[in-house]
Length: 92
Image (tube, rainbow, N blue to C red; front, top):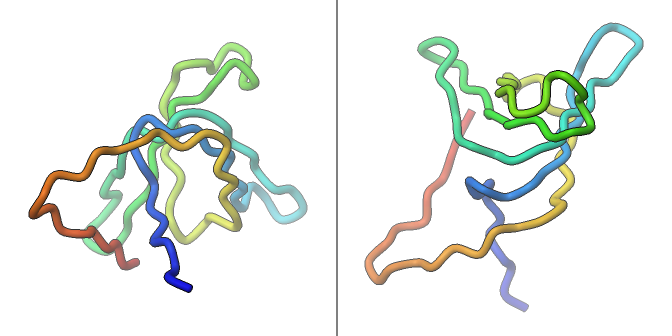
């Protein structure tokens, strides 16, 4: 069976579980908009928060990659791949 390669797709909806504090996990839900470089060696994912975040709706939250515990795929946007497009790999 051929394995499907999964990547974060801009415009798709995700729920991100990340380290919040010593005893709590932070849950962020919304639309993935891209990546942010926090330093030379640190990357984070950018999520446009949805209405579950109240007054923070439509604000962008940057979650450092090393803080992510799990990601739920809620709604995946379909992407048309053009011939010659290479599969992108992100390494942390």
